[in-house]
Length: 408
Image (cartoon, rainbow, N blue to C red):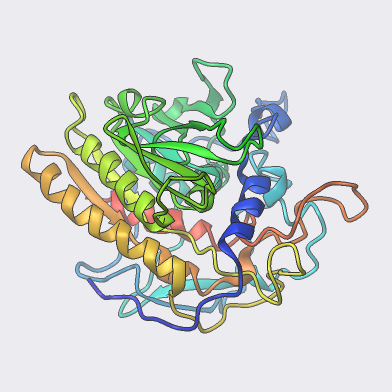
């Protein structure tokens, strides 16, 4: 595997980042399903796309041996229209709806990812649905896992709108079904991947977490055993102050300020949590599918100050950068824990693959909502969002990559 290279670290404190992530990643009162509803067929049929026929579609694929995760962003010479807009896709989270809230530049949509040595085909919605016909996919993680799933739903909306068949009213655990292709997609909220809950050790402050690093989160693990694909990702919530528990004992913490508790870094908690979660998937009874581990989405795109001191991401095009600092530390831990878990999974017939998106996304500070996640005149306590991704936007390449990974 090609190693990522170092550059100067970003300008943002971890404590500050933890707070801005709290603002943007705390579960919302209403989900994207509540806000927009599921699109239904109109009497004229003008609002609902036509579903693909029951025929096998030939999907363009990259040549064998091409590493789709290493390359560069190049101008889209065709000046392609976005795959979708906020008017054509009803599944965009408000805070990522950059077009709706007046982002003035659309040049960030006119770039495409070109792997070194080959071309990455554009997303083929009908081809994707054919590839997953009769199958199921789960997205597990934090709000960036939801961001990823919403991107996929918007891309697929050219062909078919799904029906919400969620077995629960909890808006952080949703299940959608594409009836014409018998494809089910779900999202499971688990920002740490392991068991976690708010601690009372900060006198009700509500920002200190208990992380049980050796206990997989039952909110998702036993529920994904029957899925064909499980896309696992987590990183941003590990920047929060936390107490670390192992074997039922408090062993250390990160930025907890609790007297007598030894300090360890958030790098430790991310590594151990991934170790626990990935090995649990590798040995999960009844799971015979594919686990797809997506690497960290950059948290280093704040420029000009910290999150609460004018830090922003106002660039309008890709730039030259390399993975560095905390992003690199998280990435390295994820890859190493993936490699160890993959060996164990292979031994019992479970396929585990790495979705190595970090190098591509670190080049796209222009793809975040920044201030365009709400109306400028609204009196809301929101800071510039340089963590999530605009929809449409660079995040759509994750699903172009995902399609290639699904092809036999």
